[in-house]
Amino acid sequence: MTRVFGDPVEVWTTDGRPVRFVWRGRLYSVRRVLEHWVTTRDWWREQQPEAEVTGEREFWRVEATPDREIGVYELRYDAATDGWMLSRVWD
Image: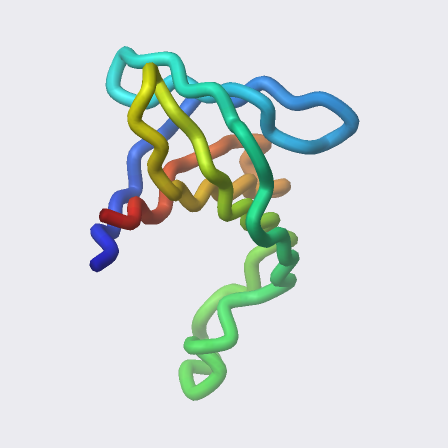
């Protein structure tokens, strides 16, 4: 089961890959990257011509842990705002 969030997170990267992030005051260490992909627009808004096309977004699905328990998290980097957010968490 996934839960959808939109929480801003602070992310540290090495060679462009996330290695740590802080979410809700807790530091998470990335153990491994499961998936990585890039989108250049909001494809689901194609039917709405008035919708503004957004800049590039990078998605990283990672295994991470704040302590011993490992979880799967989806981080999103938005190039237009130079900001990161936590998109999803898998239970």
